[in-house]
Length: 349
Image (cartoon, rainbow, N blue to C red; front, top):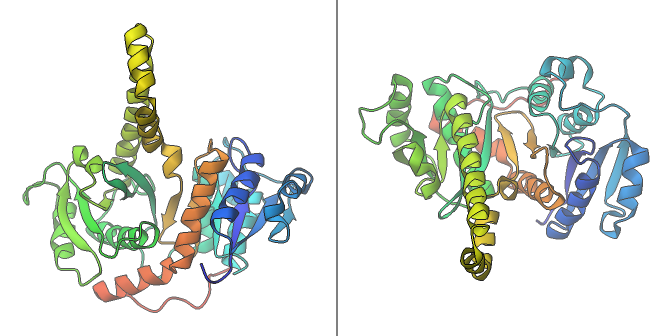
């Protein structure tokens, strides 16, 4: 990256904060030398950790707050009293232009609620969507929505497809992503009215993306589609099923390894390949879910992320900011038909 990027970090969000947040920032700084940080959290806990890493000296500013949102807090509680928390202040930094993106491993519902209230939805987006990277046989793909919207209209699905394609271009480096709609079959007559109508309109979209048709659940991991679009109910079920299947596979391998000496020997010989399989299936190695469609960039890290995994979430944030994802979404929607000019600033209310 040629220009400096300032990223706001919720230093107190997540199961192992603030240690993994600071350690993750150090790792990401090595990968992205032009990134600077604003860390929001308890200065007595955060500042000594920052001081341990020379890579963060001079590029990190710690902003003190003794308030933090817990994993048990409800979204409504976060909206009422969370604006001065480490999470709320990180989002506020984006709203006020002090940072280009916020990253938090904290409470997902609270982060979504605060982000929607403080940043507002983009002018030409009806509903924001939660998007994340998924492992496939060919690498990674983007899937959305993963739980923000249980029911979606034809227009919602189209907007998700456009936003997902922009995300794939920015983070995966794909010039023309292949986009598919999750469906109960690949035939044209399958699916509900919303899915079929969205598919018809996406086929002729004059955008840097290719609508490749419908994808069934067993095709998500094949890698034939770079972006998989669905409603939040189906997307969340698919995500949790994939994560559970990954745990099942690795758990079965561990059971087999304990069966007898020969199986243990075989697994020992093939340990490099098995470790590569484990790493590819591990959700932490595809860390960094994104709230697409907001008038500001926010990345959600896994709550139990390791430092390396949190650094990956920072990397997703940096890639989105570098590619000016918000304006790219706006331009694609305008070219698709009917987008208007973005507002000059986000409302402070």
